[in-house]
Length: 115
Length: 116
Image (cartoon, each protein chain N blue to C red):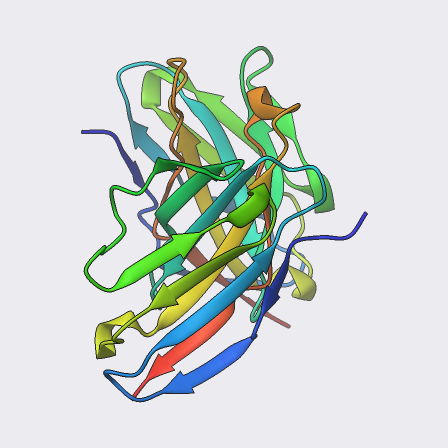
């Protein structure tokens, strides 16, 4: 069965430090891949997405993600974290198989930023 | 461009009561989703509409949950009767049919439901 795993439930980083959030998927073929951010009391906002082509994807707010087919991973990175980045981050996948395409979300990683 | 609107933002009810949530998608978006997000979990799809037809309701607890999208625009999600485990944030999202290939969904702020 297809699945999305975010192994880190909670991560704490210092402001200005680098960040990497992990996402692994299990699908028969390379799916469409997304990262969303959810601030407290808010809906989800799309940070970036990968469909094909260049495996390093740039997104909003200085985030980037790298697709690694050999590792079935799509990790989110940011070189220098700002206090406003504190939020919950969700990886999501959609099968790239035509027909009905259902989105499956990971369980999320909550990011805490300390001064 | 206005985003996805949801109301109410918060609702507290007692178990066995009924509750309804409303969603107004982005204008022109043919696809509408309802998700349930329990604390500490990712959103779980409850139902997906394409215009006013149901595409997927496989995870909707149909004995107590119902949803409709009359005229292919606004949608309501109802729970009757509510259980304690229904406490969650209910998110509405929409997607443009014209841009369907990129699968980008736009989310509303959600309705936080507390069942006591």
